[in-house]
Image (cartoon, rainbow, N blue to C red; front, side):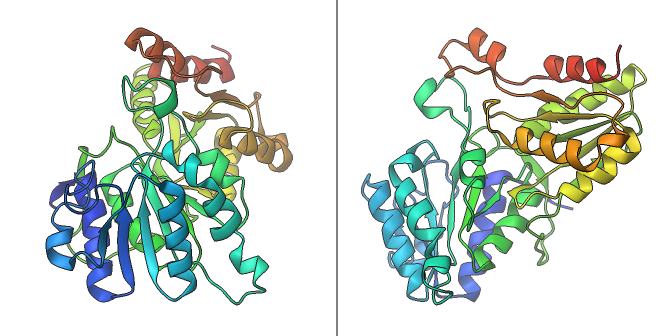
Length: 325
């Protein structure tokens, strides 16, 4: 099977869906003439023209609102934020318009649109450009929140998100755009809300999503060298969360470690921890452990970034903690 980059997988998903459905368009900063800030939309202007690949001013609230209005009138917008840090400028339209319109209109208006772009740390970008908002958006009824970890998932999940009749937050990572992975040439989609078991195991369940899957995968390999057989689950989506997959895994392994880049308070890992203690308490041989970013704004210095973010060592230490080693 061929290997393509994460950014190419996203581009293929958008191209394929736009060729089939003329109501789909892409709008955002630098998506057209510049071929995308991260070259995700490279060549799309040439194929689809300026009416369907639209450069915007630096005005996230404005073009997010235009997207909501377009969706209410039968179109299917893809709104690209250069980073989800900038989505805070547009969060009123995302939360108070897109997420609530179906409910507030008594079912008269679907909002079939995708808000997509990178989230989280991307190197030395300091505090204002390194935040995670998966848990923020997952807190809001009416939204779906998708966080793929590899090119195969990125393409399949983005196609499903574009076809979905609900507003979907699709979160990527600047640090993954160049990652390569196997992606079929034939048509495929992936279901929103279904986790994927990357590796079967017997001793502990490791759960994560997005680029933190790199940390988890590496930790599982290192743990195997010490005779610890970890089961690894990639959530793929954090609203809805596939709680059943985690519960069934914990029933087999009796231990759970969740790795998440977001801050610890009111995080996805907080919610999963509650769900497991409520639905699988009798199966736990140790308290649920979480590995999050430290509760601090991310600094600029590489040494401090390494200290604050989840990493392989902290994940291994957490696993050994729940195994009382």
